[in-house]
Length: 230
Image (cartoon, rainbow, N blue to C red):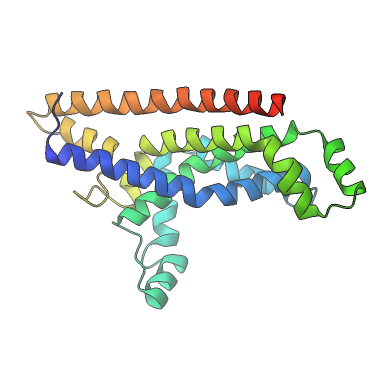
């Protein structure tokens, strides 16, 4: 199965967007998951609802909200453009933002479940031995929640590879800039002679998604075994 240059470009762009989205959102996801699992504060339920909104809202709606907020005329996007000359709309960076927003709830959910499975007694024991909060998190909590972090990151990465609705609404379908793998498939289906191209890209998309899910399960299982043997 030989790919044309435009198809290879779409695959590489998708990988770049997915890596950027996952890497940038992972620290934030860990912090949010920790707050939801360990803290009790006013507005916690609201934060939980906002985090999980992308799972229940149409991706097109999320893309429209990103356009309103982060567009060059939006409150945040306008400020970024006027202050730093940073424009997210119709750019690869904007595609990464859309993918990060859509994959963020999946990442938080996996990390939070792993964190809630950590025995608080282990953290309390470390505190009684004189360890500070950061030391407890670094040496006790973080290693025990590592399977959830890795699984959440891989699942979010796979979701970013398949993101379509928010991306096309927020950054459009610009060849070489925002035309990721799903958008390239959509473009091929709109062409009278694009069936072969669409079939090749769908096969690649299926393989990447399946590989990501299998890898997430394998990595999570491997880390659990290592932690159990430690």
